[in-house]
Image (cartoon, rainbow, N blue to C red; front, side, top):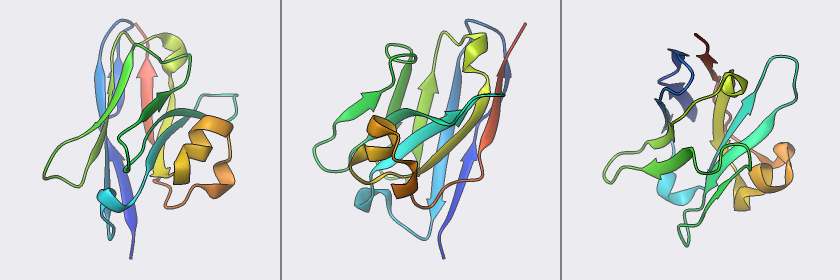
Length: 126
């Protein structure tokens, strides 16, 4: 059984920071490439960030580059998405999932993403 749970969302003010967690059970992150995605109200789902488990490469969408950082804490089966300088347009439901070769984030190949989490809401508003 594989279960993926996102946590750490909530309401933050513009310019604030928030750290999301992606905690999968039933699989080890060392064996998977994990991608972060989001879907804003009235918009299509988009890739946000991806971190490979091979060479440690990371990728970010242009809209979050320089503001978001993906990481994994040693000894924990958890991926993190540190979000800083948040903007109202960052408001969305955020998802994580297994993203082979980061194809979902890099090319929008969402059909190749497996083990989607249920998503967690992030609201950036005053």
